[in-house]
Image (cartoon, rainbow, N blue to C red):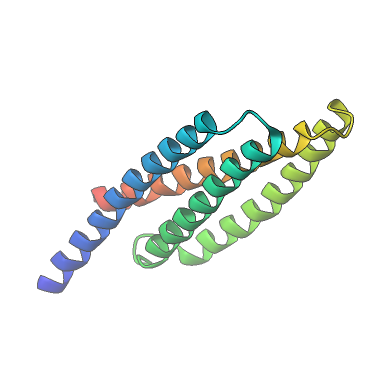
Length: 138
């Protein structure tokens, strides 16, 4: 019984940490964007830093979801994530091609693509966090 209680306490702590981390990532990204010189390379750097944080948080959430196979199908989660990664890459390629033409190959393409990729991971991470929250409510 103690092991079960401890397991849920750790899981709940990790989820709260995940939500806090998500808020911190957004706050740090906003501060970075507000503090840099408005230039493409500065914007891209801020977005890439936020992207790395979102990727790290996503990996942590996936590990937590996989750690609960009795309530969540690990195989279906794996399949879903595999398909999402394929979609994410294809979507990003289209987005990049679209803005490359729109901005006529200009540097704004880099900033637009960096922001889009960050937002893809942000949205997916929040989606996965909602599954984790539902598991923890039971």
